[in-house]
Image 1 (cartoon, rainbow, N blue to C red):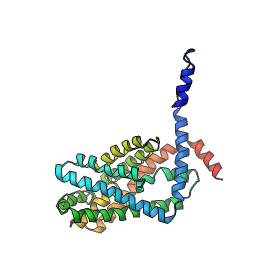
Image 2: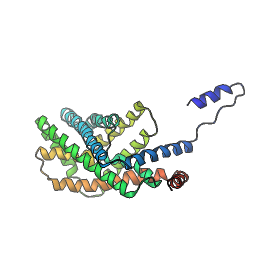
Image 3: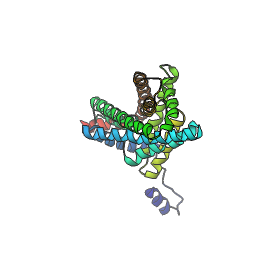
Length: 276
């Protein structure tokens, strides 16, 4: 940072250097930015929330197209996961949002009383529904445009339909929520667009390549399978969606957002006083 560089240059003769920036200060600055952005998200009108959610589902649907094409060509889930990360790159560059990306930023605003639980519920519900609607449209387009991908889509979607309600599927959902919320935290640690793309690529590949139980990604894969004639139905998808949402919230809010907010209790108190 320029202040540190300038300080060390001016004191070279005395051998005194500026102390490094403390992690606590960085956390406090990051918290202020999270609160400001979170309050903005919570205050969005219905139309903006709906469009942002729809675009987010479409962007992830683009990643699903890449995933299915590469999986069919290679048979490798890892390589297909790497291809899927293009969907997360699109999320960053297009400034759209996933439901699970709202586990840290608006939660910080609510904790600081710059937003309400009702506003958070509205944000989550509209974003999730928008993601699912946009994802279904893209899944329909993919299955109609690429009939040769039908067997691959059915296998990919059936994987999540067959998970069931058990400890393994819950842990996969918790990990998915944790991964995406950690990605969000890392992206908010820098203003450099190029640097923000790195976690998008890495965590997008981990999410899809590791076949974690993510409510939006897996729903789009299940939509594609259903449109292609999968042996399961929309009720099976709905059950998988509900269970994955619970696990995603536990992983994202419980294991990442809340634990990070505990590290800055005095900043939360200050923001609450400022909010009145």
